Image (cartoon, rainbow, N blue to C red; front, side):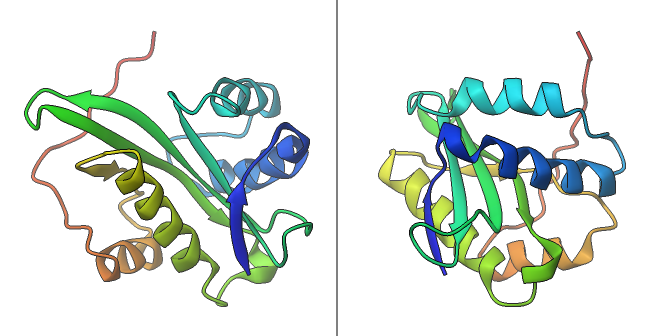
Length: 149
């Protein structure tokens, strides 16, 4: 398996994967039009972030994805990343694809000069949390809060 940058041609596969992800998350629900709009705001805009695609080979279909969004931390005085939407097609889970995507996302964030990666995960998603811990992520005492606008 390899990780590549996703392209606009990957939108249908990415939308399908995000639909699977948002259907299992406690706070979100799939909305293909919104997912397409969000992905389109990232794809081809490296200053905004990156969408990575897991494939069996360079020309293969998208089997998984993860996103990075860039911002600035005034505390660190540096660029940081928000990791979002790590999902592997259920038929391909258990083969190391999640770890491969996560490693690629960490490497990309480092290459972009990011000094920290932050992510959110559902409290009950213990498999994802175990993967993140294996890769060095630690729970934060900070509590996420949201305001819908």
